[in-house]
Length: 413
Image (cartoon, rainbow, N blue to C red):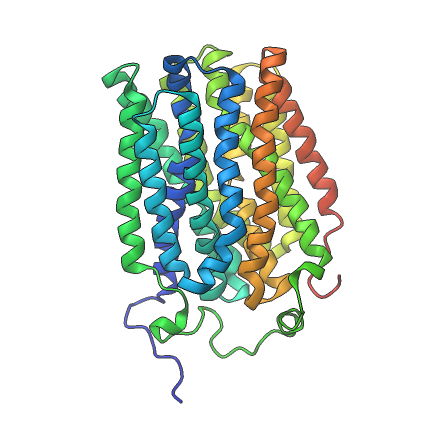
């Protein structure tokens, strides 16, 4: 039997997977989820939505996301990650197009829940492809490049949405939903053309693994009967829960807070949000690579420390300079933790169980995303300000720093 064939491209096809995966993440998470923060102020004004209803719409999206995470691993193993990703992106596009024509809170809630299902069904297999296409020594960096897709989407939405709203008027948010839906449909076509399930489909071996033997740690965990007996996986799940709980509060409400409480125009608030997107482009590659060098434990502690500062600075009534610092701290580490988690789970459970393990901790992560915005919205409505919600986020991020100290190196659990 002949070995893997050399790539005809001037670079390994794994980088095509990364580029396409970046587009998919920008579609399923960037446009499908993080654009909501920019759309909410005009939607809330037109449809008379309360703070709690805004929170529940975001929560509905994460309920759908969580539901998809439960079964997407099994579906991917049967039909292949590529087919699942394409189908999920089409679902997202269709549901967002219907939202553009909706006028009731309940209808939007249901449709955005379906959007969330598509997001979960696309995100998990996209990240799972990285474990198949890259060796562990560069997996964190590769995942880091994929997750920054959300950053590109945030930059675009921060500029596009206020522009369209200004051009069309109060109902401009409907056109914005349609534009985003069409963009996601185009990305689904690109995914259909370029995504491949595994290196063998192209006659290749994983990038970085050429000439290497299987790492003993990975053999050990690949032989385990179940990933669910690995205690470290539950610790990673707890950390992912705290990340999901806190980061989504900021992503959902920062623009609304700037407009409603700080008196910023929608355009200026959009510039703030675009700044988050720009800074986040560095978050995945920088901190994913840092975790490759320093270890997952050190990487997680640094990221959670930055996030704690971001939440504290926006929670206090300090001069605008501190808002910029908050945006900076949040943006520079925005997508770091998902990239670190993708790399970490493969080291603790083995490549053959990496997709299932990532799906499991993503389920726990999804619980945090469900609970976070709903509680933050109710708390803001009760207190009349989002400051209390951001203080809560800071406390949870601080708890994550403490929990990370219990994380051991692979093979030492």
